[in-house]
Image (cartoon, rainbow, N blue to C red; front, side):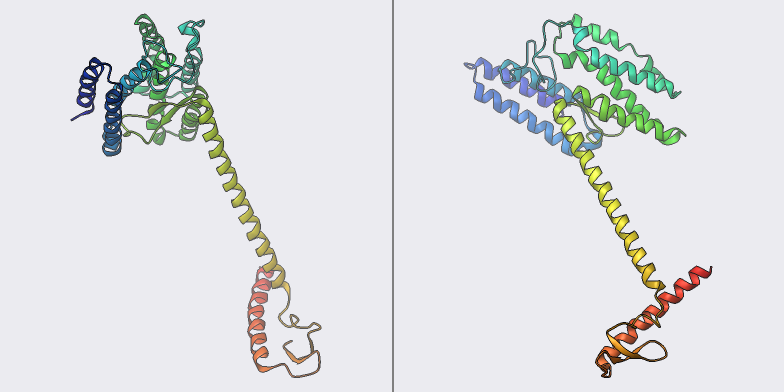
Length: 311
């Protein structure tokens, strides 16, 4: 069965459940089963994800959750998508409620046009009249802010999808991808909208999710904090490498013939290898073997340093 078939089945069973003395437990089980089928589809389909089917299921479940009074912020006719982030301010006009979404849409269009980018698909998206789509939703009695704002959000998302397709083949790739990240991580995050690039196939574009702004900003800060920590660790590692290199350089400057001439010993041969301890006794054979090994290692290190200085 495809998603639409599962949705039709759930709607039919819901009608029966509500007709049977408003059987709420049964109704909730129906919703739960539909959610499971949607999740199974998302796990299995991957690149062939039915985005529109998932949206239809999401909107129907949103409506039923509103009807059952499970979302305290939702208001009739419950035409939104997902949990209402806040109670609708009835003192504001639809235009006022979506003003921030419309502003982002206009700003993104201006930024894309400033980059001088063109393609048949991009030109069509930039010239699309999303205001008329918004007006149609208002005329149809839709009052949910997220549903009203969807034309602007979807418009921005589709423009970004096209930018990501164009970027690899253009000289301005870096600037295009920077704008793409700005749209997702700043412009839409500040509106409580998340674009999931990994949820659907490349041809479908990003999947739009409504998530409370505070949660998105917290995730953004957590990600930034991890990046700062990674940078700090990388810098600490660099400084440690430099310190070790500096120590190695200083050590290399010490002539191998002088490295053991200190208070530990009282006599040395013509190579600077100790022959007597500070007490005047012969250096033990085991210790002498270790000293000669260190002496040879230092000789090579010092010769390398002298060769480098001369060159």
